Image 1: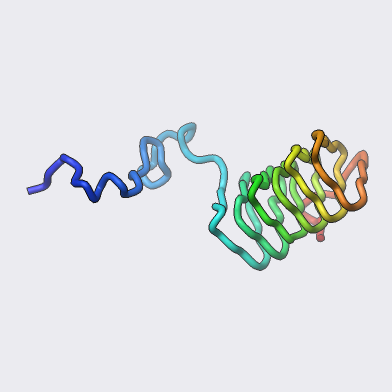
Image 2: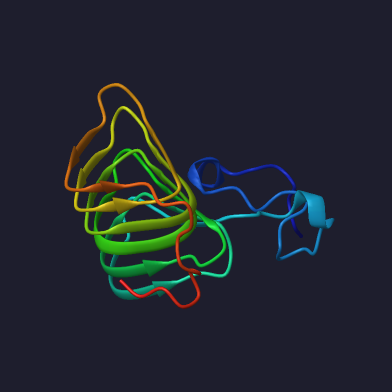
Length: 146
């Protein structure tokens, strides 16, 4: 018969998704609203997303989040050209970054490449080795190629 008490082995196991997980079909407001690529993930190629995304791993190639936001975590190592609506950088990026609305470079950001957006916010300590361009209007991300 099934025992509801956890065995010693079960204490170290990852916990099952809780209320609102996509697997259980919980209310829309409780569902995860962002795609996440963890620190142990390494990806090469073209990464396309039709939702907000957070990257903490290693990516080489191109990243296109179209009309959504992209957050690069502090431990991320990205060697890719990036296109998005809002791009938030906390880690290391080598490549061109184009955002239709805004780019945030946090104090831990290190960029090697050109950055283009109507609005660019740079925190003390952020490093940028490349060209900075603030345009009134960035071409539509759906047609933009990097």
